[in-house]
Amino acid sequence: MTKLILILFLGIFSISSSAQSETDEVLETKATITHMDFRITGKRSVSEATVAYTTQDGVKLESKVKLAHVPFITSIYSVGDKITVRYRKENPGILTTPFLDFIHTYGLYFLIGIGIIISVFRLYKVRSAQYI
Image (tube, rainbow, N blue to C red; front, side, top):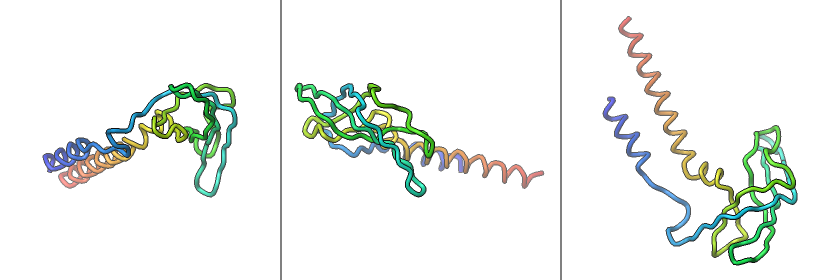
């Protein structure tokens, strides 16, 4: 049983998935927040900012980016803050942040790992209670 769980755990984390292809060149730059928008709709909250930034080609752009926030309470950032944003060289108008990239790439693996750990703990607890 332990070997099966270990094989599943290693198999899940060895799978490498990414939403972008290998040929996309992702660049980072600093951006200044010019406008903040924090909305709560139903069971969701969204923190979105309009940012001004300059691409590595020297083009000045303004675009929107979703930001990490404390759900249903407030945004972590405010107008005037400088943040790091990522964009694709082919389409510099679509932005993301390094933290949200990390969450989108590895968040599901993290949740699966927590689920496996909780399941193993509960299974161990049930088996040890049977022998008492």
